[in-house]
Length: 374
Image (cartoon, rainbow, N blue to C red; front, side, top):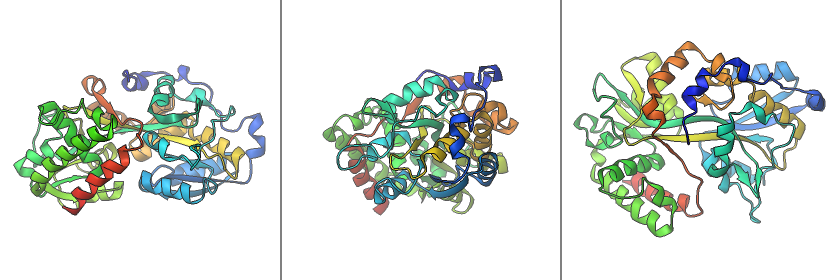
């Protein structure tokens, strides 16, 4: 997609519609409770307390650590135990019932969609946020997966940094960390750039089952040939941080928050974009079709779409809010780190996770299992 993030930070408050949480038609939602299923770090105490104080609605929060976990929870209840869920946009296809209908309801007209950057709404449709011609998921935040490294032990310049450094650097032997299901994408971008495993910049893995097996298979064999560099696997934010602080890793393919939060503690740690292109994701909010508290769900979604809460979310997590004006409420430290990482060249070379195809996850999981067992 076209660059919108840097210009987003420069937008003034005049571009923001007046914050609306509970409007006249939300009056019935000013009591009761709302059941939210969110990533572990998304609804932290300051946000939860503000929501309950502002709306009078009790927040019942359940957290998850992976998209697979969230999908299992929703499927187990046939989409009826929660009101609002925060799925990654590329996993929307995994929230379909046996009839092919989405567990998510079309976005109600009472939701303040004007609070979201128009470009994110536009691009979200192609990435998986619509079903049967209707918007079912709303962009909430976006972030990236790049390289976190300890510059004191591995002094690689920004211009030279590569996904391949996880496996080709001598100093990274036994000291590289990553999430298996992501590293085969990062390694694939490196191998495509070098010409060793052509993959149309990894878009071939979405093209067909044969292409997916060809590409994933070659990447997996290459990683296994360099497995002496593997120091730690991670599957959630806590494990990713522990890989550096406890397991002694000096480089890793991580979410942005891992590197940015480590940098706040120790400036030797930096988070940077590999030259092959930083992997970019979008997380969303959606109201389940079987939501037991639909009016309270709308109130919660509208609350999360206010600039002040978007800024609180960014400060809490290090992720970038999709809400217009949220940057005005972000800390100076957040803005500093954003500007250090997301230069014009980085923002012009982002790689978006695509909408999943029916064969994408099953085939990728086969090769993830091989990596894990190795």
